Length: 141
Image (cartoon, rainbow, N blue to C red; front, top):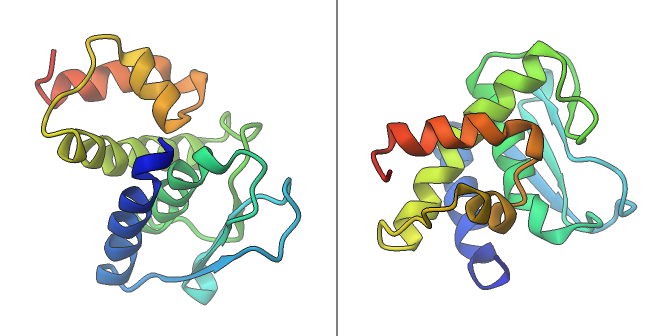
């Protein structure tokens, strides 16, 4: 995804801006410090120093998802928090945000193998069936 990283970030940050969600992009955090949504401060903090750089757009979409879903409290993105209801719902919202961007920047062409999409976007494997459903809803398969 490296060649399209900037496009994903620009579009997601524009969505946050248009939705009046504040954000900070920082390289001052440690590589394993997760990004975070802080709805009470109307702020998302994105760790641009994250150990897996290609995960950052999905992480950003996930944090935006918390705002869109009306979640409250301080909410961290990690691959270990997917069992909580609000985390799952933020992941589903992230898919709704990021998959159309993927299709758009690929001129509507989506690989037949949805795993390719998941790998390129660094979408966690626990969302396997959700990615298939979302791509089907988008009428690519």
